[in-house]
Image 1: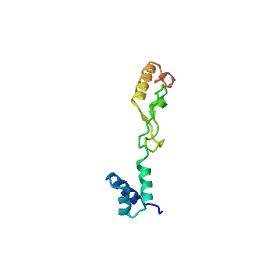
Image 2: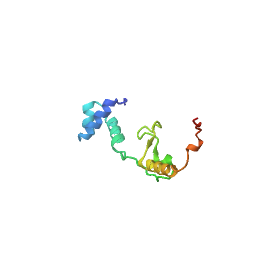
Image 3: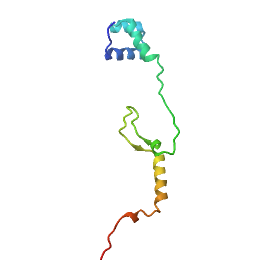
Image 4: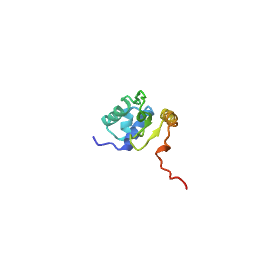
Length: 110
């Protein structure tokens, strides 16, 4: 039993999709029937459902931001969602009436 190359794996998968029997695939590719069956079992008997999760969006801004990429889970992004933007705008409107300029020193003109 030799290790199958990627090309052989792809050929087996394609032939299975073309409704070719495992015996015919084995004869055509000169691969042992047990190896063909292992590839078929690996790729076609598993449940290929997409894993999904759901979470409750809390009041924290961190939960409202997308902080990692979808596929590789790299933490190299920061994307503001619509809800985070709305929350930020509401906070800005609440605090716009405060006098922020009282801490800025401006010398009087003579």
